[in-house]
Length: 461
Image 1 (cartoon, helix red, strand yellow):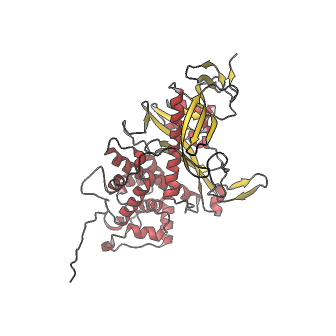
Image 2: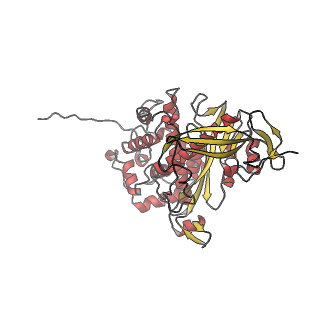
Image 3: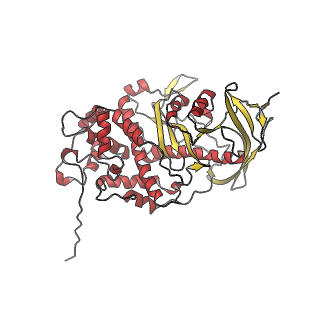
């Protein structure tokens, strides 16, 4: 007779009908007290306890964000997979849909705004530059279901020549990201017909002195930068080629002083030739113009600007890893808001728990933490109902141990590849003539100079 082993374990969950309300180990970040507080604050606590209390619905919607490929019933099954001994109910899809609408978006907005914020410590690698916390603002688009209520609020893209709509309705999402850890400090979203700068202005109240904001060319307008500077934060922004700054004073490092907004906003302009040398020997040169409120060496600022891509990595984690490039599941505008806030809350909870793991090794660069492993482990913890109410509080739990045991290699050399249109409705054109068809490593050199001929800068007479 073959010997057998019997494994038993204790699972600590909430009592009664509240038992399905959990997020596995992530419940330690989004805990019961926090969820109850935001429900009370937003006036969405159920009037009488039924089979789907508001707290349970909140955790269910957050679980939907973790399991985007799964149906409502499948996600519920994961929440109760290890709770068979409690003989819990299994509500139908329509009951779960009605529960979502009853709770609404307000508690999820409050949850996200509570969890949002920087997580890097003073010595976290890659999070600070010369004592300034580096953050980045950038935008992206999310695809929404092509339903009539959604299309009434969120427009599709149009061919200007034919005035014909195509593709899915689109939602514009902007985030303020902490470089290094990729924690989200703030977010704003809505119809894509509204410009990025308008959404970015809604996040400026999260900026403080001691921060350095990295920005793309779309944010180099004088009114926006003036508002940004009023927060006390510094900025480093790539300036559009159409802008022709006035040279007020040349500086020894090749940059020069200028102003935006008819002299109202003093700036320092760094103009540079960027030389990119690919592994196959191909050389490409392009012109850059950066506008900044800083006075540090120009060459260092050119290299620092590359950290802006931390925002793109954040969007990759949300759109490709969590959403799996799928269209959002909500078919009503209010539910879209709820889903986006839930997605951001689940993302930020994962970042907070991996930041704690990275902090346990003081010299560890957060870039080596695999978001994919963190997400998959968090999903497993939901299914096994593990770590909900731990017997002891530890800095590193199952998710932390998983990412620490499977660290990514140290940051690789910079690579480049021609952009391809994975999405046929993308507004971005191919750039195969500017970049190699296959991924190649490259080295970058910056030659800082005042290029009066190349960029047509004007000298003050």
